[in-house]
Image (cartoon, rainbow, N blue to C red; front, side, top):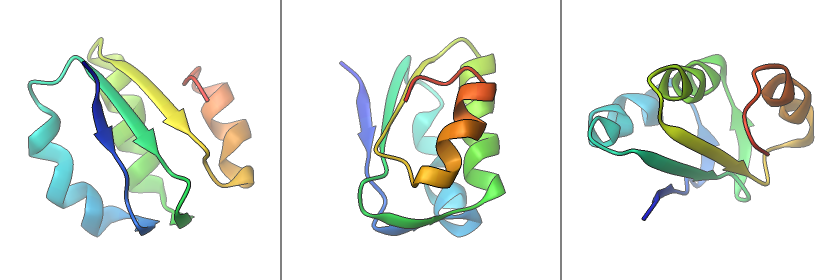
Length: 77
């Protein structure tokens, strides 16, 4: 079963520092960004890093501007 991460308002470097270690042993992660207004580069970096580690990663409802970036990185949106 996938670990669901749902940040409120911002998925930024501070939030990444809080959750990064919690995701070490997960094989599937779903990021629900429906409540996020801010997603910074550290969040994108974490998502890409998890995918590179072979984890199944899905991003739900990202802010519109990030959809293109996620598609380029071949992250399921």
